[in-house]
Amino acid sequence: MADWHEELRRVRKRLDEAAGYLDLPRLRRRRAELEVEVARPDLWDDTANGQRVSREYGQVNGDVELLDALGAKLSDVETLLELAGEAAPDELAGLEVEAGELLADVGAELDRLELRSLFTGEHDESDAVCEIHAKDGGTDAQDWAEMMLRMYQRWADRRGFGFELDEVSPGQEAGILSATFIVRGRYANGLLASERGVHRLVRISPFDAQARRQTSFATFSAVPFMEDVAEVEIEEKDLRIDTYRSQGAGGQHVNVTDSAVRLTHLPTGVVVAVQNERSQFQNKAKAMQILAARLAERAREERAAEMEALAGPKKMVGWGSQIRSYVLAPYQQVKDLRTEFETGNVSAVLDGDLDAFMESYLRWRRAGGGADAAD
Image (cartoon, rainbow, N blue to C red; front, side, top):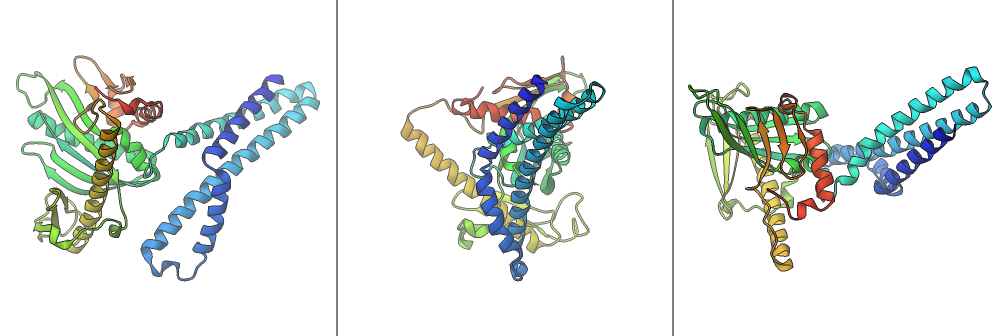
């Protein structure tokens, strides 16, 4: 029985730490404030605000209820262990099994909660606006970009996140030149931060008649999605707005009306295109949100660059860095070149099994690896 009491102490310590880094007292206060907001009869007069308040309440209330439920389970374990101390021999084994199952349940939930402590960015909880671009490798690179799009869509599906495909530029022979999409879910942006950079694919080319090995590259970027465009000042005179006919499947208006919208922000050269909404007005509104997100991220990067310049020279890490290799031939391996995490199950990774790579990146970043990354 001493072993069970020691395990209980260890798990309770982990729960206390979780209550600390999630700041349970603050969560309880915030829940009380949000309960007042949710009960207001005029909450949904402003739909965007109603959605924001409702979403935050769901997250905060869920965190509080989870921590309380885990504490209740540990109290049940204490009760079982007390009963076991007085139980007859034929009852002892059953009580220990039940206590062990409860401790295992709490431990598994704490494993998931502890991932939260790895999110340190201001916008880690946000939805993410993502882009994929085919780079070196011709048709193979365009095919690789489409494979990556499928990989991230499968990953989002696995986690129960929303996935909104906003624009796709088809490749010349196969695959895609680029894609823009939004992943909606708590910590989507924090998780997808691990994927920013150049992804390298090595395989026997299906487009080479001589079946030679081909190396191709595609890039992935993610920035926090902004629901409120007003947070970033965008003047109409700074925009060039082009409309064009949407390409590919996506609804009854696609290839019928010139509903797709391309925004060019003239001062920065940032270009955003959206084609998958049902009207030109909706496409423009979504494009403005994505543009605001990209401009906000650009401003953050510029501030960070200024601070780094003041701090002195460092090894450059950025958009051009190769972060991960996916090798299909002559052997099977996916390896992250920053964290050294790797797996031989390439098909699972391409089917969206990315969580282990993301977690290893977050742990590596917290340990200081991101300060002087990458190969």
